[in-house]
Structures are given as structure tokens and as C-alpha cells.
Image 1 (cartoon, rainbow, N blue to C red):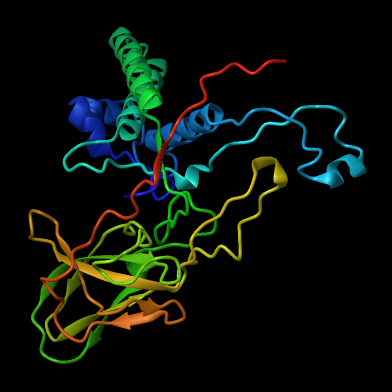
Image 2: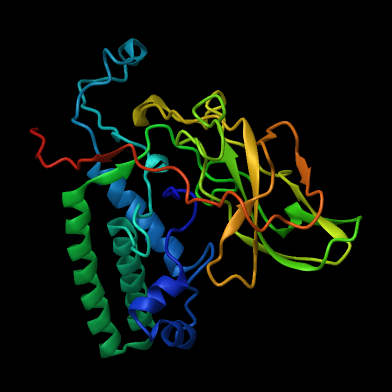
Length: 324
């Protein structure tokens, strides 16, 4: 399943499904919904803060866990607090088909609340104030459902290629796709995505993934011209590597991930209403091989693209008040 850090989780279409006025209000108030400056990205950040606050471990001194702290003279008797799980290990989607997870529904309502809060401030519209209050209440209601069910967690996460909120994940874009003029393949309007796999951490084959294949990268459209084949590159992407952790101090605790040892290529047909995408390579492309070229027309049957890793457990939120 897609991880919390793979992307923004919520899309403008998700907001529109709950409120038919979203597009019109955003346009009238000149409020971007998606992208780095959009309301959805702001909601993601707020939700990330809330999740980290709700998963704080019991307080305590860093002394003992890190003797150098006392030696440096910075302990001072103060307690410490750190997250029990990193947000990179949170599963964002539901394991059931055609159903949003409580996490995603909560984030969608937060996005709607922020939209109408912003719109009311710009337009001084009482109706926007009312809708802001409505979605604030809905967000709180779904948060209670999420809190009672627990947070789906992967013990060893493998973020997708080009993860939007991954540290140093690199960029996956149409620049990673190209055509090679060869053969006599027919024209094909394709959808293309790739995944990381960890063959040393559980991935054996397309039917035995061992919870070691990431969710898909962003799905990109690509017109494959007649007598051309698709070439896919991972240049500009940085595969997850547990031996090269992103910088974290001891305050936040360790983050352990899977290591990407290879990658898979999936292609679908833009005209397929189901949006099914099929594996193109028989075995994972080695991580040191930066380009994979199809031998002909894309395969339109076989192993299908799946959402990614499934949760190992539902992490209970802390329900106690810590003593001073």
C-alpha cells in the first residue's frame, strides 16, 4: 500500500467527491489545491504534525540511552520525548478495494477545512465560515475513528521511487522516459510507473513479494510512437538504502528501512478504464542498472501492479497522560 510519505495522499478529486463546490471556490478565491504551495500539501504537513504528537513515547532522560549526553553537560535533569514510529512507516491506504482508509478520510476533511478557512478569510463569506466549521467537526469525528482503530504501520518501510515526502528521494518525471526507434511495434498510449524491490529483504518473485516491493511511483502518461520502444531510466532517483540513512539526531530515535536492490517497470494502456498496469521485466532490474528498454510492444497481460507494502500491525495511540 502507498506509504504516508510517498505522496500527498489526498488529491483534488478526493476533495471534490465530498464537496462539489471545491473547484469553483478554489478558482474564485485563487487558492491552489495541489502542488508544493497547495492546500493539500498544507494539510499533509498539519496531519504529519498531529500524528507525531499522538505517537510520542513515554518521557524520560536521555542519560543511559546516550552516555555522551551527560558527559557533555547538556542533560540537566530534563526529560526527553521522541516518536514511537516515523511517519515514513505509516500505511496511507486501505487494504480493502474501493474504500478509503480512516487516515485518508481524515486528511481529506482537513484539506477541506483548510480550503474554506482560507476562502472565508479572503472573501468574508459567512457560508464559507459555516463550511469551515462543518469540516473541522468532520475532521475531528474521523480522527476519533482513526485513533480507536490504530495507525497501520510497516516495520521496514520501502518508500516509492521519487517519494514526495521522502528525504533525498530524487525526482521521477517524464524526463525519465524516452523512446528508442527500433523494430515494428505498434503505436501505444501508455501509462508508466516503477517500484523498488528488496531482494535481500523478502522479495523473491512477483507472486512472492515478501512485503518488500514499494508502492508505485507517480504514474506518467507516455505516447509510444509506432516502430519505437519505451526506455525507462532511474537517473535522478535515489534508491532507499538503510546503510545511508538520512541525517537524524538521537532525539528522534532510529529509522530502519529496507534496501532497494532492484526495480520493476509497469506499463498500462491509457484507454483501459480499470487502469491495470502490467510488469514488463521478468526479473528485477539491478539497482546499478540505470536504464531498462522494452524489447517490443508493452506486455498487456501477466503480473499486475499492486499498491505496495501492507501493514505489519496497527499501532495503538497513547491514551495516558504523562506525569510531571
